[in-house]
Image: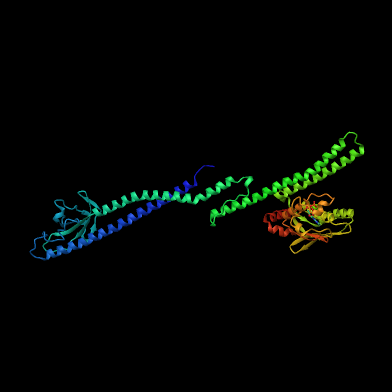
Length: 488
Ligand SMILES: Nc1ncnc2c1ncn2[C@@H]1O[C@H](COP(=O)(O)OP(=O)(O)O)[C@@H](O)[C@H]1O
Ligand SMILES: [Mg+2]
């Protein structure tokens, strides 16, 4: 993973976006300001032109007036702010120019002089001996005996230029400063926003198997980070639970395996003892074989449990009719019950299929029947029955046995859990039977219900969705079953 600071990245992008925004804003504001000032200068030029026209008119109306004397303030404006006036003859010859022009005439825009009909013409900005000016050229009304034909007024653009330069300078100073400030603010903001993440990282790094019970301090607010923290905490919760289960499980397994191993060892020693008779050896080997079979069954069950938990079994699921399974289990149950002097009966229905695995379902039914027979004294009855109920199918095993204490009910599905009565029982069993039942039921989306009265008996009921319903609940499965249906 490339090592990069999220904080740097956030700050970088924040500052970049800020800089671009400021630049665009600054340039736009500057342009708007320039356009407004420029338009107001154009207005002033036109106004000055009208004033000159009326002044010239007044001067012309006096019959003996000497043309364009020093008296007129309009034709001879004060030196500041600079306003230059010039009067031309029809041929473009300068008849008069304002005193502030000194000896330099205003430049003549010959394009503007070409046609009187064009009225007032503002020429492109130009320079008059280094001074930026804007000039308007306009035709004067014709008077008898007068050769004045054109007026020119020019205004200095000095102020406009200055304003523009000032703006640009301000932009040049403000922009880097603003970028600098926004970078600092961004850096600070990023640190503020990311600081809790550092805390999360530190806690997460500290958590090891030994302190899986530690949790990241939750935030008061339910923001993204708050949700991240609660998600992590939930993950830790699950990890802790799994971890505990695994450690308890290993302890239980070693415990369970120790007894048969000790017995096998003892029996082997007996058999190998000097002077052991043939009968003694035979007996020892029989016991050892018995224990080995018990162990192998235990290991097989454990393996099945592990597989179910990791979900490895599910890919083998197909549409499975339950009736043949019930028939098989009935036969086994009948044999078990007969050996014990218990009455056994079974009822089944056709057309009840679930989405699942026949071997697992057989195991589930068998474990329930096995328990029922095991925990029912001679003379009792055990009933296995299958019934359909709307969109579900119900498998139930009822016995008239010893029953289960209410306090025990919650634990009988735990691995290796064996009830007090069971532990005293001579018949084998390792407490994995119901754990498997629970796992298999879960894998088949089934639910288990137990009702029991100590001394009277128990009823175990597992309810599965019928396979059409199971298909609907799991679209991927439905697809598989459809394809299978087409093939067959
Ligand atoms: N039908 C039943 N009647 C009475 N108790 C039962 C019955 N089924 C299960 N139990 C109790 O639940 C415990 C766990 O059952 P299980 O997981 O099958 O283990 P195991 O049969 O090996 O003892 C049993 O030890 C027993 O106490
Ligand atoms: Mg059992």
